[in-house]
Each structure stands twice: as structure tokens, then as C-alpha cells.
Length: 74
Image (cartoon, rainbow, N blue to C red; front, top):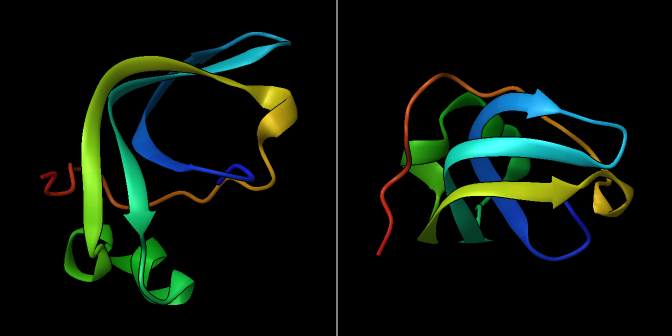
């Protein structure tokens, strides 16, 4: 999770400056965080596909492992 926005994707690499995500989505609304971490597909209310992206590590507030898989994007 970053200050804004939240990204959900497969972590495929990192450097001292970036995390690299594949098949990522920008998550507009997660619902309750504890439920999102257990089942992102079930609780995600809105997300947009952004593809393969770097995320600056300095912007990251927290990382949460979630089950493998994608979330529905609109």
C-alpha cells in the first residue's frame, strides 16, 4: 500500500529504489483491509488494470501478502 494509490500485483523484483509488479491493478477501494488481505477478489470494490509497473519504494507504507491471483478490474 502506498500513500495513494494502492497497487495489487505479483511482486517480480526489486531494487533499492523500486518494487516491480506484474499484472498490477490500481485499487480504488479495498473494503475492510483485513478482509482484502485474505480475499482481495471478494472485497475489492473498484480497481483499474495498469499492467507491469515499478512502484517507488519510498512511497510504500506497507506490503501485505495476498493469495495468488488477479482482482477484477473495470
